[in-house]
Each structure stands twice: as C-alpha cells, then as structure tokens.
Amino acid sequence: MTDPTAELGLDQPWALSPSVQLRPEPFGALAYHFGNRKLIFLKRPELVSVVRGLGEASDVRCALVTAGIPEPSWPSYVAALEGLAASDMILRTAA
Amino acid sequence: MRLVEHFEHGLDAPICLTWELTYACNLECAHCLSSSGRRDPRELTTEQCEAVIDELQRMQVFYVNIGGGEPTIRPDFWHLLEYAVAHQVGVKFSTNGVRITPERAAFLASTDYVDVQISLDGATAEVNDYVRGPGSFDTAIRALENLQDAGFKDAKISVVCTRQNIGQLDEFKAIADRYGATLRLTRLRPSGRGADVWDELHPLPEQQRELYDWLMASGDNVLTGDSFFHLAAFGEALPGLNLCGAGRVVCLIDPVGDVYACPFAIHDQFHAGNLLTDGGFRQVWQTSPLFQELRSPQTGGACTKCAHYDACRGGCMAAKFFTGLPLDGPDPECVQGHSELALAGARTVPAASQDHSKAAPTRNQPVMLKLMTRPPVSDCAESPLAGFTP
Image (cartoon, each protein chain N blue to C red):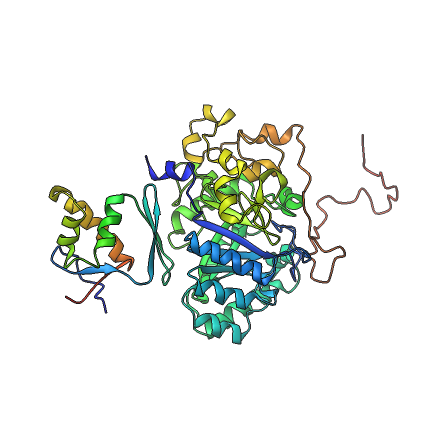
C-alpha cells in the first residue's frame, strides 16, 4: 500500500498506478485513472517518458536520467510527479 | 503551443464523448435537448453497441457519458454497462432515476468504474416537476436514497439552471450534501424541445450574475461540465477549459449512430456522419469535413471588437444556432448585453431536423401552467378581443 503523506524523493521507487492508462497526444499524453476517474494532462512528451519509465527504474533519479532529463530541470519534473502522486496516478512501490 | 490551442486543433480521439443510447423516455421534460420520448426503430442493436465500445477501447476513449432518452429503460442497458467497464471504457450515465432500484443501486455500489448522474431541475417538487413532469422529483430523490443506502459514493446531481431554480442553488447544494453527492450545474440550451421553452426558462441577465457570483463563492466542489464559459466575460474565468470543444474534444453519438459535434447540437447542420454507414466512429471523428472545419481557425466576427472576447470566445455555438443568431456573433446570453439587439430583431429560429417526442401526451407530461399576469378587463367582458387595442 502507499503512504499518501509520503513526500516524493529522488531516491524512492515509484510506478504508474495499475488503474491508470496513458493516451499519447501531440502535447504529451492524457492520463486517466479508472478508479477515481481523474483525468490529467501530461503537457510534455519528456514527462510522459519519465512516467512510463518509473516502473522499470530503481528510483525517480534513475527514471529522470533514463529519460534524458538534464539535472537543472529535475525540480520541475519532481513537482509534476508530486502532482500525479497527489491524484494517485503514480504510487510509491516497495523498494 | 499551449494546451488549449492543441484542443482547438482537435485531438485524435475525443476527451469527452456523450452517447445517447435511446430516444425512448418515461418522461417528457419540456426542455429535452434531444426531443426524446419514443424509441427509434433504427436504434443500434446490442451487437452494434458492443462494436462501438470495442472501437472506443482501441481509440483509448477512457470514458463515455451515457444518456438518452432514459438509457436505463433499454433492456440491454446493464449488459452494455458491464461490457464497457470490462473493455476499459468507464461510464457515467445520466438518468431520471426510474430504474435505480435498491438492487441496481447495490450493483452500482459494487463497481468502481461507473458514475451515476441523477437529473433534478428543481430543489423542490414544485419547481422540478414544472419542467420534468409530475412525480419526477420523488423518483429522483428515491434513486438518491437507494444509492446512499447501498453505499454508493459520490453520485452526481445534475441541474439545468433555469429562471425558476437559480434562486435554489443553496438548496441544491444541501440536497447533494444530504445524499453524499456532488452537485453539477449546467446551462439550459435552446436545443431540441428546449427551443420551445427557452424564452420562458433561460435565466434573466441579473440571474446570470447571481449564478456567476454563486459559482465564484461556493463553486469549489461543484461541477459545471465547463458549461458556463460565456459567464467568463463577467471578469475572472471559472475553472475549466473555457473553450467550445464541439468536434474538437467532444462530440455526441446518437441512438441511431449519427455523430454530432456536441450533445447540444442534434441538427443536420452539425451532423458529421454515421458510424454504421461512414466507416466507424474513428473514421467520422478523424475525417468528417464538418469536424475539420470546426478545428480550423475560427473568426470571432462581431465579437472580436469586444474587450471580453478572449474570455468567452463568443460563447456557445449551439445556443446561437438554435436561437437563430449568427454563429460568428455574440451568444444569446452574452453577459455584456451584446446580443440584445439581435435577439429583439428579425431572426429565424431553425426548424428541428428530428423529433422523437411522444405523439400523444401521457400523464407524465409537464403542465407548464402560469398564473395570469394581467387581470381581466372586467368580470363580464365576454369579447375575446376585450382590452386588445391594435
């Protein structure tokens, strides 16, 4: 289970929720959560790559590196991921 | 490119799709958008509906808003609901509540992917039944009770805002709170039978302001379906896209498989094609000339001179069309008053291109009786022209 109060850190493993599907769009993707019926727009293709890579990566840092995100941009991606976590789109997984 | 510009150019699949499953209805609401009443013999069969769901799954249309008519009176409604959910197409369905029995409510409470929306157009039986017909308030409340008793969480109560119910917004919110539901307010459109009663039912200018102020003050947990973007011209925009999504991110599939630009535009003018005869829904959505046109840059016409054009984008296409106003001019309910002249002048309201209203009224028909607003000339003036001065 996830801890909703957990802050998202670079060293933590996260993954896309199994209830969520991504639909590719020119601007990025639509993310839809079938359980809570929330629809979120991922407004950058790079963010979509990060989100898709989360489950494979050992932690958030690894997902950012794999997606080729330059380190100075990491804070904005972490903020975007925190937004997704707040809607249960991505979940903290067991280490 | 900003997100809203992507939407204006249209997406490969709709975000929000309304699917009316049947024109049959137990009620005869005075303002019905789709002029529903009688089933159409050409309505899609169960197998055809399943094929539509399969295609929506392939297109990753994540959810559909199912309506009608009254969708639950289709004998295969519950089957189609389960079929959609099993194929990753979530469902929100609109109902007047007639078939939400305790047993159905228990079933609905047991599934995650289904959302229920109960229509209620008055916070009291008097106001609701005036437009929705006798007994319809009690039916809706009973459905809400059944859902609550079954443990169904967060049903939606959908209200069409009218001149008669704008003063009841707090009462609607109280009803929603009582049943653990979320209030959803939408705009009255002059579509379908709504065209016949729009003059009498649409909110007065000061009521538009009242609605806007209420939404700004108390609207945090109230849904609007992005219905009121014409109110953005009052000042600060309401939450939502504030954009007409017709044919760009929304559309309507009607019971016979006709695809229209939006749920408020069931008319030949906004007909994009038919999914049985034009190669399926994806083909219609992606290639219909009408949708291509709606996705091309639009001119604001007379509105571009207005300082508020960027806020309201000229308002609702369907509202203009069905009141006989030019599509590139102001909305009939323009809050800056720019449509008053056009509404007062000569205009031709377009004839309906379909009507499934019941041929003979039943006991469910609303009786929109009004008290006399003028006293008789005198008690014994028998002439039918008494008091009439040409």
